[in-house]
Image 1 (cartoon, rainbow, N blue to C red):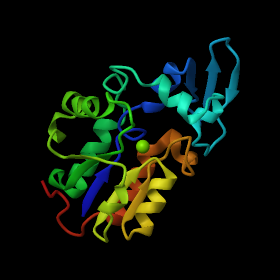
Image 2: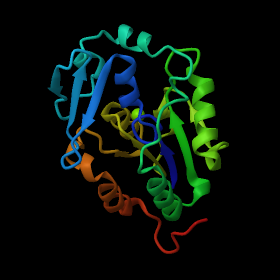
Image 3: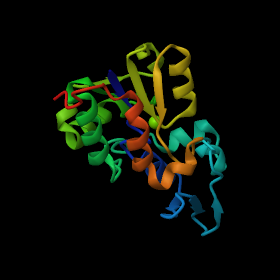
Length: 202
Ligand SMILES: [Mg+2]
């Protein structure tokens, strides 16, 4: 099986940095995974579970939100999530490293694509030749491919195009109940796609 692994929201913490660049702080409740937003005046409000519209929750239009991110080093500066090593080890052990490809949608900023490539080279050098950058993820869908992505929309499109998909638990998607123990959820869920027999495909 071919694994297509999303970057933003799965490997790279896009949301925290996107909030910072839009003058908001983000707090995570470690027990529930619940997110709280705080603006520059110190006003706080809860991020509704399953809500994907990050711009709207901060009171920005999509255009304003993306404009605030259009700076050099925004994309390169994204922090890898703590679970990255655990996730990649699990996937490589289950499916074989040669069957894993990063699949990430670029933003329109001129900095985005070159910095995404640099980010992969910096944080995931083992995958420096195993990535695809493009918005039409569903063109990779087939009955032997699995997309792991934090967007309900991407997951649904991929399934509708004939692929398999796993919605990576985050507070902003419909798997939010598993956000605080997402790797346990992934470990349990991935088994249904694991190859039978020798799983250490190398
Ligand atoms: Mg994503």
